[in-house]
Length: 121
Image (cartoon, rainbow, N blue to C red):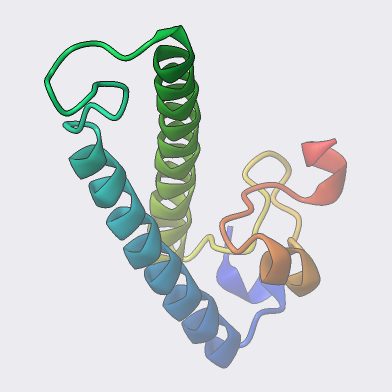
């Protein structure tokens, strides 16, 4: 598979690489912040005693949401790493299943796309 078939110019490839780098940095910061937050115990009162059931429920709900957000961010970081590897190897912008060019418009929306629309569906 060669990069020329993607119809992406060297300028576009640089722009996508920069966008991937920026998003990777943003997500990395969010994951670190969420990880730092995990040490806190928001469901506990200042005396170290458990709060009432409502407080505990609220704390559990926050923890579940935080965990889901972190998992989503980690999944996106894995997709970004894959896209950066395809950039490095010269296959960025090509469907990993059929080898067809992924339209630039799709990459604008999801710069880590690894499949063309028909293969993704």
